[in-house]
Structures are given as structure tokens and as C-alpha cells.
Length: 293
Image (tube, rainbow, N blue to C red):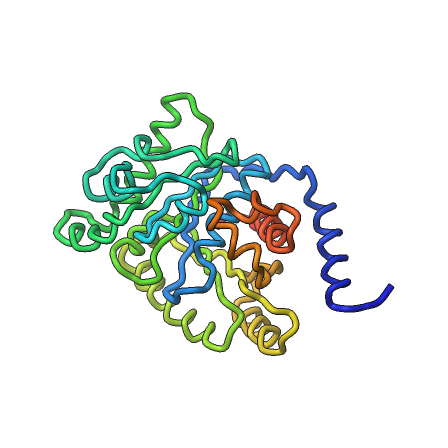
């Protein structure tokens, strides 16, 4: 059989598909709250949030996605209604509406839910400025939601993934204060490490002043093109600097990942046997096997 990049990829996909078929992920000892953050836009942050969430749910876990980005792309990808009349994260953060009144079930997955974002959330940055304990609004909402689920006899959440804007405004601060872990998607390109160092400095500041328990637990290389030396070099640099945090799995550049949201789906549901879907499922498996901080 001819040894070409395509054949090697097909062989990898086949092996990965067999490894993941019917796999049930291990349940964490307590709910893991992970904020997916990067101040740089266009690095696959929302794609990573929704596809990891879908893969975790496919592995039998109870998962909630919190869409804290006013663009609402995570809500779109999960086929969740998020027009102006829908109760959303704006109501939770600004008007203290209980999260349990906002959360919607995701159509493709039995154990996946989403708290949507609407365009009104773009005004929340300004409205939160004058509020008492403004940085803790999401943390308190998540705690109360978990208590409400317990009182209602619903299963405990295993993972909460928070998608936030590509900036360090009050929405992102809320997302980082409300979480225990940060997962950073990094595009395999020249400026990746430069943006990462700035993000890590800001996370250090937040740790000192607002959330001492916050740790960068995972770094995921996205839009990885194995054919280029640049991608391999960036990947090696990231692994050299962050050997413990960087996941072995890389997410390839993929047309399927890009087009899935236009159908209101994650790539895990849209084309479950594609290279991109298998990569996100492998990343989710790796995430569950790494110890919680």
C-alpha cells in the first residue's frame, strides 16, 4: 500500500475510530468547571468548547456549556435558540435570573445542555461595572444552579465548559473567576506563543486578586497542519514551554469543523467519522484521563 500523507491519515483515523467506539468516559470526583479562553480571536475557541462538550456527552457524561460570548456562536453551533426574546446569560449576569430558567437541552445529545448568549450580552460589560461583587456573578450563578439541580433530583454535572469573548473584559473575568481550570486553544502559527504569554500574565493577576484556585490545566493545539514545518515547530515550542499542560492530541485544519455550525451542529454530530470529529473525541478522552487540579 502506498505510503502517502492521505493514507497515513486514513490509517490514524481508522485506529482512532476503533479506540473510541462505544467508549464511556470516567466520571470525575466532582464537577470540573473549565473556561476555554484565549485573548486572540480566530483560534478555534468556540469550536473547541462545543465539540469537546459534545464529545464528553457522547462519552456518557453530564455536560453544560455556558455561552458567555455576545456573538452567541456556541449557541448557534449547538442549535440553541438565542434571539432577543430568549432568556440568556445576560439575564443571569445582570438581572440575577436563576441559571436553571435559562438552560436549554441540546437536540443531538441527551446529556448536554447550554445556557445561551444573546446580543444583549454585549451591553453587560457596561452594566456590570457598577454592580457589587461584579466579578463573582457567574461563580454564584453556577453554584446556585448545581444546588437547584440537586434539589430537583437531577444528575450532578460532570463538566461545565464556559466559552468567553476574545478579550479580557468583565465577561471573561467572570468566566475565569467562576472556573477552577483554564483550557487554552492555540492555533499552530507564528504569533501563538506571544499571545499566550500575555494571557498567562493576566491569569496570574486574576489568581492573585480574585481566584487563587485557578490553574491552566490544558493547552490544545488547533488548526494544525501536519504538512508544514511551521506547525510542527510551533507545536514543539509549546510542548517545550508547557510539557505538562499541552495535550498530545492536536486538532487539524478541517472543512468539516468549519461548516458544521452552519447546520446548527457540532462536527461530532455533523460528521462523526471525520478527522476533526475523531480528533475532538480523542482530546475529550485525554481530558478525562488527566487528573483534575
